Length: 376
Ligand SMILES: *Cc1c(COP(=O)(O)O)cnc(C)c1O
Image 1 (cartoon, rainbow, N blue to C red):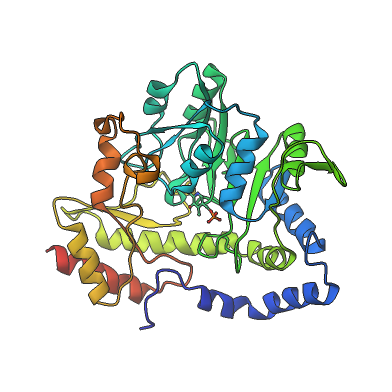
Image 2: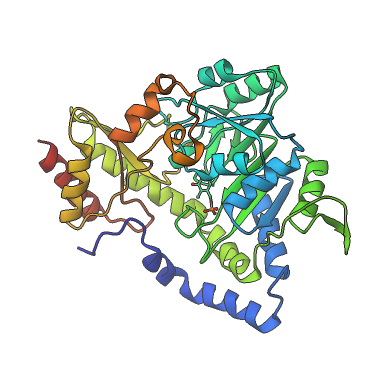
């Protein structure tokens, strides 16, 4: 059996090496390192794949979130509601822009922001909601959008972990994540479902005016060369990364299918165990692209399991070990931690198993058997 890896970027590269190397070589030859044809081609391909009017490439996923928020022209002190259980980048950009992050609890089944908790957190200062499609599972967008409409709020999807997932509306209509809100941000960090070979990100929107505004923000606030209309940033996707992403985009559905197959195999082996809750799945599970395959370990020693797996050369991760409301940087001394019963519990129960497009059935069987051996 091959050595088990949390993500296996090397095997993935081996499979597409000739194509990727050729694409990189083209950029080296045409020397259009910044804003070259590869960037425009990737942008157009991604717009077509997602069915969205505008993709605005940028330097990384954190920038994408920040720029999306800047595009909405919020004022300092405006409140932005997001999940207590997510990667810190989501809340970091809210704070950086001097907006006020309002953290709310999540749903124990999906790990995603709880619409009821959103409603309870709305005040006259609330301006936006940032749902995160955590671990690749789509948030409850229909309900979130209904709340936003009722209270006149913006919705910004953090799609860093959800690219390629589709959401089925109650009337049967399907749409890709990242196209279900005013504006969305994504990351192409190497380990994401669509990963570059370095940092990269993008913003998506169907709003022409917002897209135009954001295209200026990413480029020093310029709409005409050397005329700076707003305070912008410098956040570019470089041409080499775009050329690589363009190749990998052709495989995204295949990669996500492989992840789903691995997830189903894990679930078949691990479900119905008294100490394990396997990830929630909706219907045929096209709403989940398994950026992570995350179990809840209940009435048992999660940290002991992590140690045991590592001793058996099985990598695993705890995403995330601390609720955001308890992180030093975002600590509000007045906050009532009993408002976060689900996150407070999840941080002690979750464990993410190796998940990537190259996992083999014998690896999944080995991992599952070791987990059960520890728990039994
Ligand atoms: C990875 C990630 C980001 C940040 O992306 P970077 O490209 O690393 O800046 C933001 N939000 C979530 C949920 C992520 O997983």
